[in-house]
Length: 96
Image 1: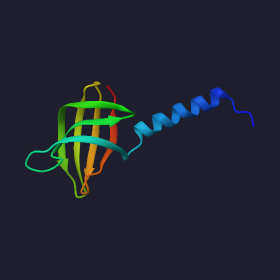
Image 2: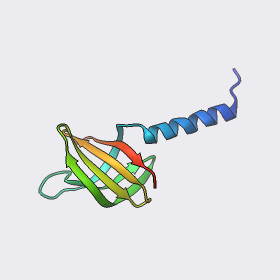
Image 3: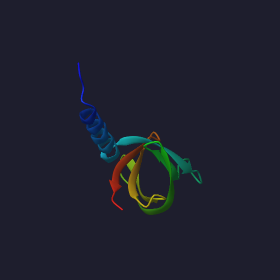
């Protein structure tokens, strides 16, 4: 079976973009622990890159998740959420 390199490369590129923009992508987050564990995110790993949280621009508590809109050191804003079990998910990426 012969596979066209351009088609495969294009498909991989599309899948990577979908993974970054896909809701509920599980991510690894390093947190500050103050009065409670995982109080707020200080960094997270996305697509193999460690991003530092420069600012938390918004934060709210939902019935099942705690949400954090953060500005990372790459200039992009991200909406992170943490469930009751401490699993972190990428909800949304905002353009620069």
